[in-house]
Amino acid sequence: MGQTRTAAAISHNGNNGKRAPGRPRSEHSRQAILRSTLKLLRQPGGFPELSIEAIAADANVSKATVYRWWPTKAALVADAFTASSEQELQFDDTGSLRTDMSLQMRRLIRIFRSPRGKVVAALLAGGQSDPELIEAFRDRFLWPRRRQAYTTLQRAIDRGELPASTDLNLLLDSLYGPIYMRFLIRHDDLTEDFADQLCGWVLRDCLS
Image (cartoon, rainbow, N blue to C red):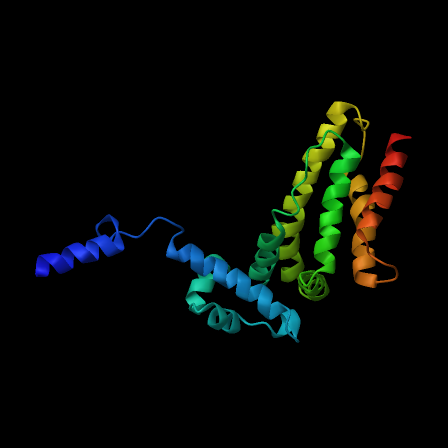
């Protein structure tokens, strides 16, 4: 009888009681923390009212588990937004700089217009008085995207679409600055078509 129960337990668990294939439990906890962070950030109060205690409770983990991966609330918030948008904001390689940039900029605008835009607004607004927060946004979101953009622009230089002397930082600021301005100031509509207009104007000046 005991042997039967043992055999049944092994059959139920699989692999003689070993954990079934899949992501480790700790990864599930990490993803839960990221989801809870985004969820709570959208509530009234935003970043200033957000606490590690509330995030841990919503994700059903301990505070120590949160601090195992993120040293500060700012780092956690920046990573939560980055994780939610990383795949969407990859740069394509279509063989055309204008197409590559326009597609990525359209996706960025789509994110800004979605509920996730409130997270970005909270990060940028809070960062004006919290150096730690704006540093986390730069290091964990802005610079990784910027490095990908450099690669895209370098491909365009290699193809002869851009002059080798192009100031890459000035070009990127010219392309993305107006998007952030419309997003934050709201003086005009921020639409996906705006990305096409920007690329047309900015890249035409670079090639003239």
